[in-house]
Length: 119
Image 1 (cartoon, one colour):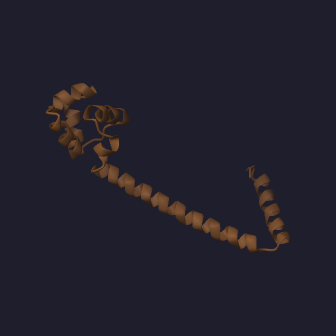
Image 2 (cartoon, rainbow, N blue to C red):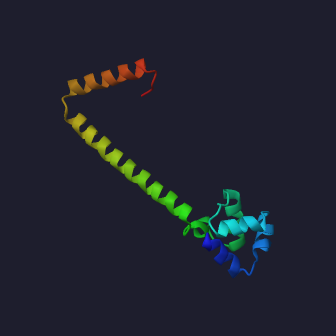
Image 3 (spheres, rainbow, N blue to C red):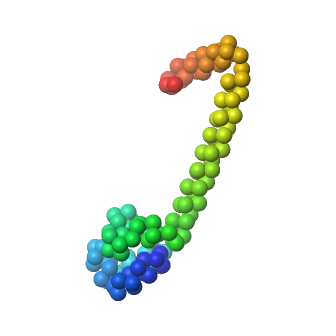
């Protein structure tokens, strides 16, 4: 997390001084700055207060954060695809005659009851 080092240097703090403010060791600060370990959320909150920036600003250039971000993008894209598929299915269902829609609904209801699921 090079950003931690940059923000620490802007305040003129040593690793030891920042560690004392965060109640972690100087070694922990070294590890954060060299991406050897990740600070927990409470430490990130304290850093945010000390540096006067958002947590996002602290982690935005971090390799770990970028991997999480791309993972979230993937989840979002999958949800969009799922919504499109659900919408397509709903459109097809609505085009069916009412009696067939009713039969399908009753079948789904029976399956849910047999599996102890709720609608």
